[in-house]
Image (cartoon, rainbow over all chains, first blue to last red):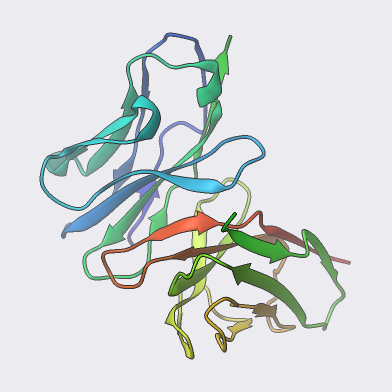
Length: 113
Length: 114
């Protein structure tokens, strides 16, 4: 069955640390890839997405993600995190020509001031 | 401000009872989605609708029903056939077509069994 794996359920970092959140999926065909974020007390929202082209995708608030097809991965990165990045982050994958997203379980990120 | 309104925020269901969760959007989005979230799991798609008067089953549609009579509204009914309905339910909306994705989410409804 198709699945999305987010390796860490909880990550705690200090401000200015670099961030990388892992996301791997199991599907051999073409995919669309997404990262969503939910800040405390706010709605879930789209952070960035990849459909085709440059595998390095820039999102809002300094986030980026790199699609590595050979590794079935779409890891989220930020060079220097801020306290305001405290949130839960979800990776989602859509197999080609399919309306449905397959979601990871989420990673709770806590940034210590 | 445009957005998605889900109601109620908390809902309790008795055994054998049907309950309906409301989802309204004023974003003029064609597509709407219902997801279920269980602890430690990602969102799972229950139903989605790409256009008024049309909807499709997601991965876990059994025990649920929906309607899409108006563009703004996509109510979800949790029927008595759903044996494990306790969960957090999220409604979302977005553009139509395979190149689009859920973009806006509601606050969710937490359903519990009495």
